[in-house]
Image (cartoon, rainbow, N blue to C red; front, top):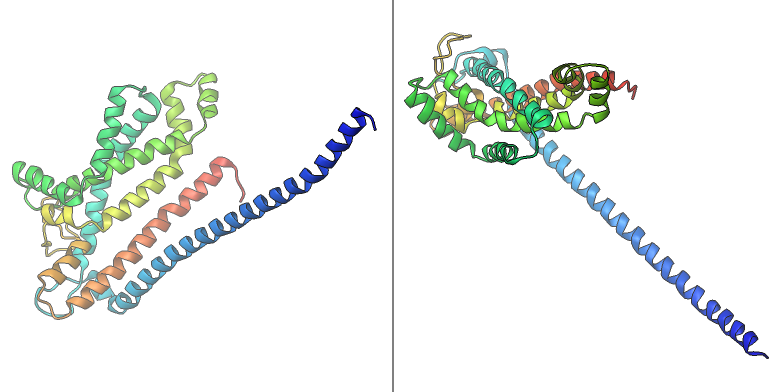
Length: 316
């Protein structure tokens, strides 16, 4: 056998030995990857089911406890400090009134700031400072904002415990989240939309108003809905600014009147209330808040989804 033939024979034998080893190694690695994928998928499903289970358990408990207490008299009636059977009519009205005022103050400011950060601001220290300030304000505990509102609006400006003081302080809680949501919603709009609009001769503002904002509207509405739901259940801020008393007339649109809300009334009856049925009142308020927030979310989420499908031309 020549030297070349011997070399070829050795190479062929080596290939026969190496190929099965490589094949087995690849199969082993493939099985490991599949096992890891199955474990990760199982963990994700378990986490999702656990969160859903906690939510369903919480909602079911609150609704089972609170629904028997709900009635027309309870939702529209006047509260009682001593006797059983009082309602939450003024608190129910004040919850929506303060929320509407705070969102009316917060939305224009947040939209303006979000548009500036997304469309006009350049990457410089001023922009970074604005974002840092916004994010820092979003992390401030609500009780600190309540103390700030009491010092500024209640005492310094002489508003006293009032609906307008509570709404202005609640605005400080809503603005940071709304600014961030608006900026992110505007950034999700493809740049091709901006370029096409500008190429057709539209100005910067016309592009923002007629092209960018309509396409970003579903995301902005979702952010407003989540912020409003959070503000609806806020307690600490309104205890220090809107007070724990209500007007004896419903509805009372006087912004200088005290404006106890549902969440504050729940805290009040359980903390210092003297009514014998305070537990039933608290359970009823909890169920009423949950139902109100769910309806509120559906009222805005469903139209936002329909608008998004209309804008994108999707039929799914």
